[in-house]
Length: 388
Ligand SMILES: Cc1ncc(C[n+]2csc(CCOP(=O)(O)OP(=O)(O)O)c2C)c(N)n1
Ligand SMILES: [Mg+2]
Image (cartoon, rainbow, N blue to C red; front, side, top):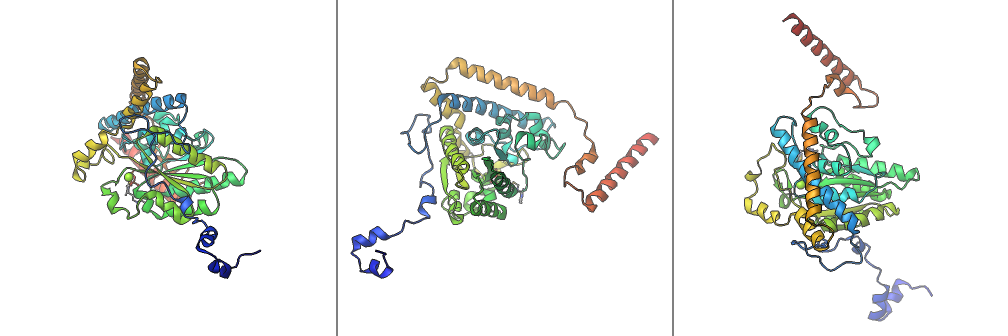
């Protein structure tokens, strides 16, 4: 027997309830509260069947890379003061996000980072000197994107969201199970490219994980002036994309949530959106004075939610880390920073004309003209030097 709408209206209230179709938006919405597996002080919270805790050796490696990542970050900031780096956007405080996210993907997956993700890139195993080449002002990108399957860091906000959708679609089209992980900031979710990328990925079921690090500020603009949405994760529902929010300073939760999001994308179910609630402890870059737009009490409150200390406390209590292991990892981090310092002190020879290479596969007439202009200026400067 087929059920007509009239029959439904005539049926008893109980029968009517049974034929009400489920709300498709409901399954896409994130939990009302961010997923959290460790309390702020590092004590474990009740386990969740939907977000199984990663294995102990994976958490040990997560901790190790977070410690190295933080040391890298401090060293990079110091290099700006020594004039070795033009600019550096620190991700101190965001270690759980930076490292947890890249640990959730395979080497054969693709990562689409922004300027904020230098720590994520070194956690992915890319040479730190190559990572810092862009910020030293030497080149567009210091690593070979195809070799490390990591796109150049994007400074134009949100453009990586469309690149990730296109690459992921292309990979799936060719029958590969590659996932694209696209990092994005809270502020950049207001950009058209974010919405276009998420929409394209959803319509064409492109395997992309959009990972929003909500660090509460877009330079000086606080989240309250950025959006009226109850959560940035809610931005997925309008495009038919399932989403989740996570405590971005809980490394165990970040890795668990990202692992599930990546599995969703890899299984051919389309994109997934994760919002991580975190905080940028340092100014936007070394060129910014954060005291002009946020007060010290706010920063101090987030200091108490430090992700590295939280994981260390937990792993010590579980017997995964002890004093000797912590000291050994700290030593590794010092050696890593010393090596970075030494290699960054060597001044590379950069050909100014290489600026025009690889902008397009075929240079445009304008580029050819500009290249010629620079070449002529360099030749004139050399001739002058020769005369002097
Ligand atoms: C298309 C575009 N508009 C503006 C800028 C200038 N800009 C650089 S960083 C930034 C703030 C971005 O904030 P958010 O997305 O929250 O990332 P965060 O820096 O906090 O990691 C802005 C407006 C830019 N780089 N690109
Ligand atoms: Mg931000």
